[in-house]
Length: 419
Ligand SMILES: [Zn+2]
Picture 1 (cartoon, rainbow, N blue to C red):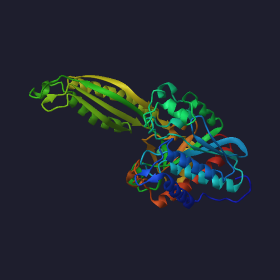
Picture 2 (tube, helix red, strand yellow):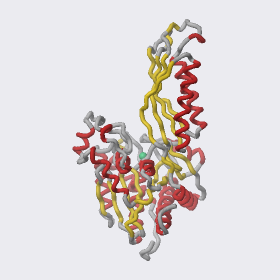
Picture 3 (cartoon, rainbow, N blue to C red):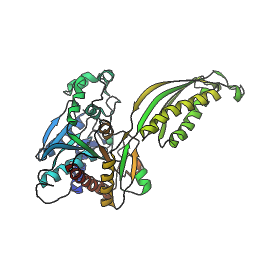
Picture 4 (cartoon, helix red, strand yellow):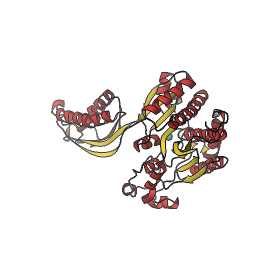
């Protein structure tokens, strides 16, 4: 730090106490209740503001409802840290809020040291989970400037309200939300800590890992069209839509694994869906995810070839429709190095893993801001559940490593933009 005051460090115990306090305020027996724009979420926001009020920061909300706290540095060049306070209904005690509260603690540490060399901004993104309308990452999409107001205008909230009308009551205009992208203007790096929500780190026996990026995904509806028939017909003469779908599900898993990714088949509807009748139609929703943009592109071709081959072998036709997609967001090579060094210094070792699930950090990376995330091990990989938990010493290690990563990133940026 340049102000000449002594080095200090973020205090993990204070982060854990704040997590407990937030849980007291916004959780019940079922878990965390911080659905975006609900009473619990507003309570969480008010608590965060009361903590920020004790720091020399400027607090504002942008056009998408994201909250920003800015600690002015010696330069207007800035870095951002953050995550999301919103939770799924009956969610866990760490998902999202770990990143916001660790960021709050890092601001406390920086403010105590004096004036940081660059400006540091904490962001609490709005509606990361997407449970109001099944549209995730609303706040961070707006910061990227990629929200599609026309598409979102047709969405309906959990309470059955049209989204534009609902947002207006929260003081937000759907058509203006992408103006939040001006927040990115001077941001040269974005850092986030989050619980893993899966079991890779537990499998490796490690507390903290460096995330290489968020996965690109393509979700489609694929329909196999066969011929309704009596099941008495010899098997090699049937045009069995269900058999085609079943083969597709199994082979898609292996195909996606060969591209370093993950496949998910989540919905299957049959017509008819009865004993002794060969199904004439099987509608299947699947998604394929991978981390390298080239692998995602390869999968978009490969799944189609697989469906066509199976359809031919099973004497059925195949059609498909797009459902949803997102680009892979690889994180920044220099920040990955800095994150590895910080994790290794704190835990004695480091490891890298991809994030199959979406995060605000992915949107910020796709906006062109150098980005990296740390994951803290989740016990049993459980998340989006009140049983979500991490070992206390793993959380402490993650918080320390993140604080060190912020320090190192600021030092690196003092020499110029990241390379
Ligand atoms: Zn989250």
